[in-house]
Length: 395
Image 1 (cartoon, helix red, strand yellow):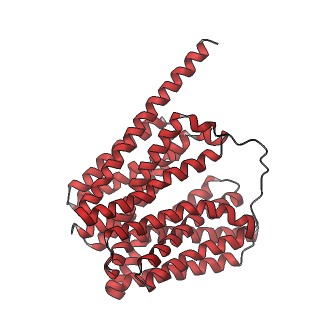
Image 2: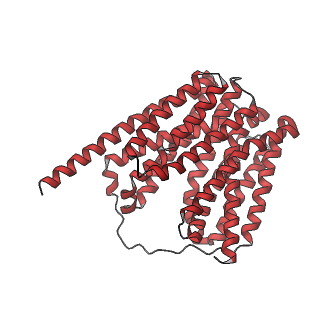
Image 3: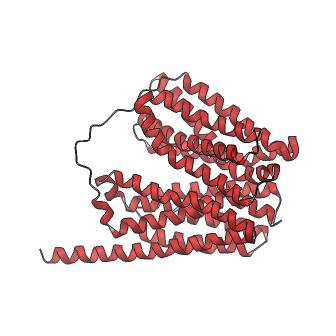
């Protein structure tokens, strides 16, 4: 490995740990920001949705901008948006500017994920060890997020969240300077002469998979964005413990997803998805019906492990379709991503009208609908196998 490649890997590892830091800090910062500026829960939910919208838009921007400006300039521009976003949030409580700030953080977060994964994959030659290290560092950043917020509020009181936000901005600025000194080659372009086909859209299993991911992302985005606010507003636990549980959730999700890599060949994927959806329902209900901190901690860990198996398993199940029709992944992520955008603001609206518990309870509806699509997908899979076996017998 050349010297520049080693340096670039260090840059990617550092930036991805910061990606986990600021990505997971938003849920901890949200109740402090809403209290500081006197925002309603509806606006708070819209901020989460704006961040998710930015994350979704990043896939498009990270793909199109390098064609015009090159990879390095595009990378530096998109990474800088998180700095701009946090500065906007610190300076004013104007809802429009706050929405733009959260949108920018989402674009930067999604872009960092796209670019860092691609660069590390290219430099390492696709070695899973490098990619696993990359995602492990994301978990390190996520784990440190609540401690940074706690440190900020310890130093600056209720306005200490601004210290945390500006610290993140400063660290990302350091990462941007590091990337600016690296030699970053543009991605190789592959000529595709084959005719685009949308035959995959006729598959029932494909649409059932979209349904599963749509409602899964409803759950993931709402839980990550609202869980700290829920614990604080319901006076269930201290703000500091609530923030640490939010990071615990994501760290457990990451551990679970890494575990899936080693068990996927040993355990049928349909079994994983069924148990994961049932576990998500059971642990989420447990989370809502108890106020005991010990049981809530167990519920958070169980919820994280259950949620971990859903997203990667669905993508793996569609592996053949994605390989034959690469555009199917884009359609899947676009439609499913609407769930992550819509559910947080719906939760916020319900919280304003009926209370935060009602808003969080609405997630149960999304979980039930996700389970319905899981059942439909499993049934359709068995039907497809039966049809295929019948055709083979008649040949």
